[in-house]
Amino acid sequence: MGDGEPVVSRGEQIQAAEREAARQRILALAEAERIPVEETTRVVAASRRRRGQR
Image 1 (cartoon, rainbow, N blue to C red):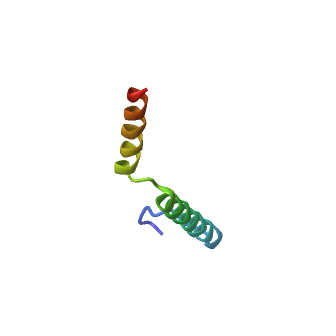
Image 2: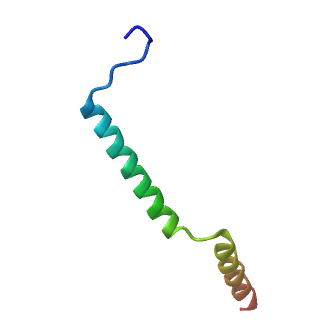
């Protein structure tokens, strides 16, 4: 034990693994819902053009 490593219980290891799995799921969902910058700038540019034509 004298190597300076903290002792982590099995329960703490499981909780850490569950937190990491949840984090990965959230990141995957966010990536799936992400709108590419090219699409957002295209929409903004089109709406600006329409306003200018009025």
